Length: 65
Image (cartoon, rainbow, N blue to C red; front, side, top):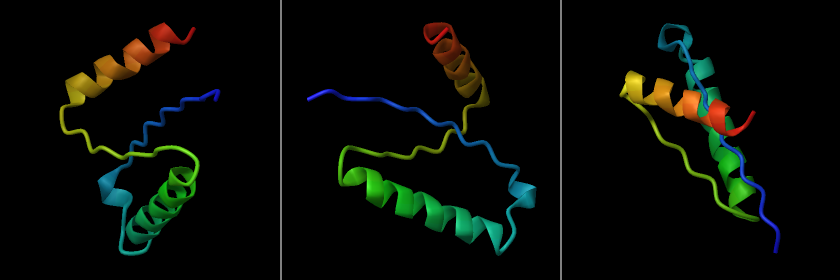
């Protein structure tokens, strides 16, 4: 079986997530996860260490020229 791997980094301005956009985004992410989980694996993580996230993004760019 051949596997494909994807990493998505979603950055949102929490001040712009109101009572409509916030729940809608959560619903869309849950639907996407349910769809992917049928054929693979999908996991979400919330990152609070901004420096670590920045380093991770730099490493991803370096590893995928």
